[in-house]
Image (tube, rainbow, N blue to C red; front, top):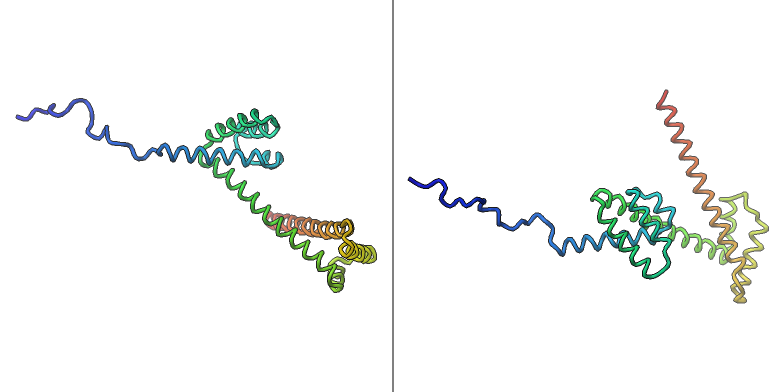
Length: 202
């Protein structure tokens, strides 16, 4: 009769098999480095942006505190602490922060493209008289005389290598016009949304 206890020494045969579902040391190190970098990106960001990011209060406090430290060694230690705090976040919290930072980068690219477009328009105003006519048709509220004087002065500045005072002023006028258009478009969108809400309530 076979012995039922034979071969049974108090453990299962699969107990000593390696567990492959745990991340390797190198994978853990990579994740740790990524979280450290993410924390550093937040430290480098503007304070008002950081305050709007969805994250636990203690993590945000560590980042905001680190931003105020100028001493090299103190800042290095504070950055390490930020990294430590970042490692307490779960995957969803990390994903939210990453998406927010990515949206900042997208916004920055859009802002850069927008500024380049304004520069091209200013250059066109200096090189082509019809560009002023088009600008005035789009924005009849502009002071024609003032703009003509600025364009004349800017051309002179370029020709004589003088400080670009009028050159910059033209750019600022174009930038203000763009801001106004964006604000008007946002206000119109809000009005439309409010009207839609009212019609839904009826």
